[in-house]
Length: 397
Image 1: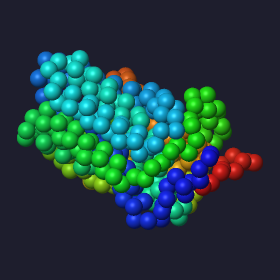
Image 2: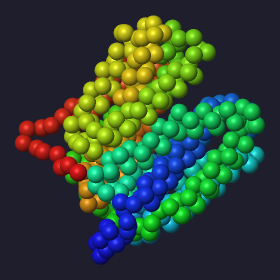
Image 3: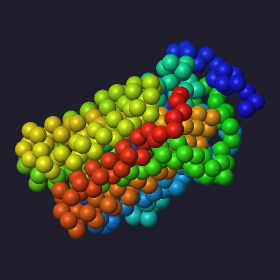
Image 4: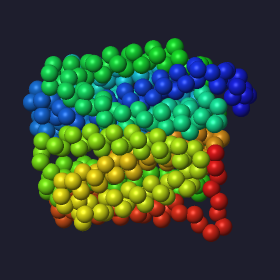
């Protein structure tokens, strides 16, 4: 590397560093909100575009799959391009995707817009996930990374419900247009608040493959795949789980999901604090907590109160997954954080799509309770993957 980190990011201990981290957090918030926006509006979207709800659901599936493929490709393609410029361009691409969805008069235009959103998401996440250690002093990098990933949790708690409410009041097209406007604002905030940042080192596809083969990196990716697949296998069916197993009235589901989201935000910062000290110790705790909580739902969550309590614990445990697995990978690949983040985002988004598929197949074949057993088993497998092995030590930040 021809430039030192201090030359690339001057004054990294200043208030501007925190302002930059906050701007990056709003970027992750915006891309996740845009990705998940159709969740609460599939019925009106399908009615307007004259398609079924199942077909309308492809607006989510395709976006996630495109992001999974794009993440390990965009970063190498960007080369040494200033990361501030790259994020600015990607947020504008996100805005174009949202605006295309807002004006779509047929399914093809809608899907084209959703593909652009997937491309933007696949590019924003790897870059955003690796920036906090470059913007802040080492003692604050863990908190900064947790703040960046809080955008993901806050999008679920505030962004998607706000978009859904706006769609109910003013129409789904207005919700997409509003997301596009927010994307434009965030793009210019990033341009104003981030310093000039060249890539720490060029990322090449061959290097990504070699990095994925390193033991600690491979372990982190496997744990991410297992945890996220298991979570989304179960969370996709959280409503029928609460209604059929816990006996929760349908009118309370929204409030319980809000409580789950708030717990996720708390878990994100708690996991970030633990991971800043030692991802090797924190990730097994999260795996064990998630496995235990999900497995207990069919057995102990048979009343509304117990079901709600386990749902909050579930949110608390899963809230720490993103930031802790990212911290694991950053520690394992401290000289190639951006490349590790690209691999992480690709695996994460592929696992989301695969998890929904696994949950659906399990529910159709075996019922709702077995979905929770499968999810718990996958989290337990992640725990086994990250437990210390004799004669090995994890590289720490």
